[in-house]
Image (cartoon, rainbow, N blue to C red; front, side, top):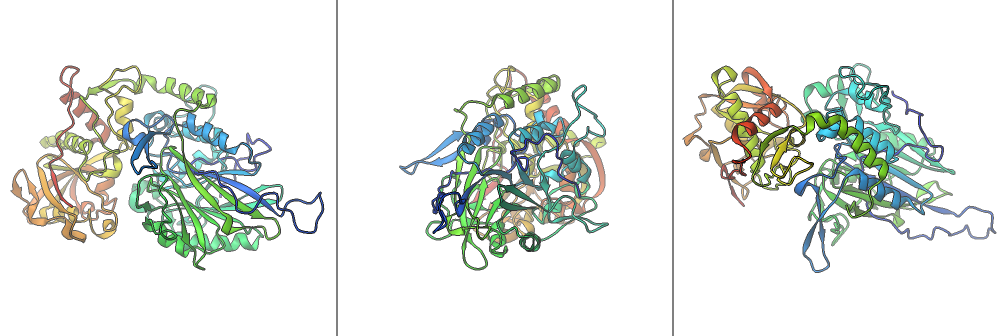
Length: 601
């Protein structure tokens, strides 16, 4: 087990701050903070004290404000209209958190995982060292691990925690050694297969003036299904509820009665507006998804749940097993929101007065002053990244939406799939006839407006990397027509029945998606065509996809059954080659039509 590094810790902060939870809303406790024990004169501490819990989640290394629609949060106005507000960027997140902490002597900052991974080039190029450094500067106290913390495997995760330069690339700055996170990463439900021991610390206790709050951190049990096999090699992932309940009992036995669970799993509110009341008409009525059942199963010993993974914004109460309401929060993603929760701590019982817990999400607006230390950090790493990041790769005539598109078929998804097909269609490159791209692998939009000095419409290497940051190797495999049909049906059935994952498909593949039906029937089998011809279940097709999908990732076992595999170039290389081949300054690439998947609502 790795101990929390003690270095660089200012004495006033017991735990260094963890970046990964969006904490929303300054809370006013129901009990007056100054309520004295009855019958005592002056000189005694008040019976209760308000602890401010600030949280956020799913930062994904977005140090600079996310570009385009991916950088907006939705806010419902008093008249019912919805407004998009540009948000995020650590320069503003730092200011928001520091402003929120003012006047709160008891303040702890926690995160819900996916602080790193799938990061833009500024962080991803340096194996996310810049993000860990920024989180240290934000005074993060603790974070759970998310699935993306495992993208580069357990050894690299340990390096992010403990410090040391990258084993292959070494130190990025002359004479500077990477110090690691000065906050603990918690992974209570991740154990080593060989020893059965936890990979990292399962919990930590934040203390100040006799006030003690325990934090237990878990990632979703399904992490191995959404991370490459190499990333989770030698690790076992356990049930979230059982794990949290086990460690809550342990904390309770040690006299820690106030407990917060940091869970990298989430849900979705009925509205995408961050200020939606998901307790209307009743507690937790406006939220659905895996977190609801998890919340209902976690012991009443736990006083609040900070969640993540789904990139949604919500502040709800979901009843605990004893029927009492309990706060469940999530702060969108990319540092666009933070959650501010007030926990009223009773010094006599050492527990949280649950009836007085208040919480709200707040927008990290871009009209507040930037934190100068974060600006310096971004400038420093940008100088190191510039020679690679600023190289032009191609030109676009307008925004091509990927992450920011809510449609099943995304314009940028079509471009990526076409790039993969074109690069792997030649006989010596694999002879691909069709390509599939997983929607979760598209991490941003291609934005027409210049991000730096490159000029509008220019796609730089940094921007292309931000769209496809995993640099997955491409595979071309043999699949039968029957397996191909099964794969398309797995988009809306099996592991993906509750929340469909619609693959992005290359040109020539068409079919109808009937959302009025349920399960596998939503993909209308007899409408599936490749270049106008019905798919022959008995014929063999050459299919291109990234190594993650080819391993059956994202709930696609049919894609994992491919044979006769050829490994090609990386997805990013094919994407950049396609941009170079299909665009010039005078003839930029236009957003493609989205006419491959016919959707019936």
